[in-house]
Image 1 (cartoon, protein in one colour):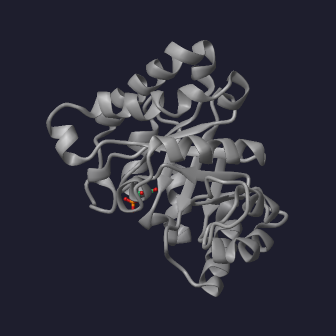
Image 2 (spheres, rainbow, N blue to C red; image 1 turned 180 degrees about the vertical axis):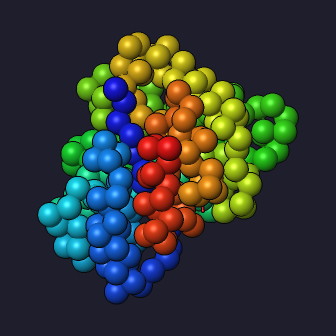
Amino acid sequence: MRKKIVAGNWKMNTLPAEGVALAQEVVAKRGEVCECVNFIVCPPFTHLAQVAEALKGSTVELGAQNCAAEAKGAYTGEVAASMIAALGCKYVILGHSERRQYYGETSETLNKKMEQAYANGLTPIYCVGENLEEREAGNHFAVCKAQIEEVVFNLTEEQFKNLVIAYEPVWAIGTGKTATAEQAQEIHAYIREVLASKFGAAAQECPILYGGSCKPSNAAEIFAKEDVDGGLIGGAALKAEDFIAIGKGFMA
Ligand code: 13P
């Protein structure tokens, strides 16, 4: 049985007090959904510590949205994996399309970030996905394959056992356009095949999340697909009610 995960990527939203209030509300409503669904929230760096405090005693877990490629030292403005781990993070989102697109993250940088994550006991949520042009040209399979081969294939078998993948088509992020459940299943199954070509049976255990305008009204249909193990949620994760309702998609 693969882990079922609903992870909230808050992106650059919420001030500390708002983030704490949101986390408290998620904790309060979490009981409405089966314990078999794992909830993760990923606030901005600035209030990881306060949100960690708000999550204490609950089963809602904490993640960060990024980490530095280096361990420590003269890297002004960067935040090390050891720092976010010390604040109570269990996960770190890496390779989000917004970081690839706006901050020039390449596979080379991501390989280093993955190493840092594992060296500090964090589970990476590694994001892959094509843009609209690539989808329209039918290149989505090749794009996702390359993003996996160039980074995930460098992991050891041990590391791979502690990995979450998120498929996020760029054209569906924040656009209100969602991949259909069939489109999601098709590429999730393909991603699993690519993973299996390197890691064999262990690929069956790797959670693959869908991300891109996932909301309460479409979560159940998408999560019902065999190779979709949950969601990485942006906008809808900023409302506790919607975030939890997405988790209920597993129970529909
Ligand atoms: P939206 O749910 O806002 O489309 O964002 C998805 C996403 O990028 C999560 O990482």
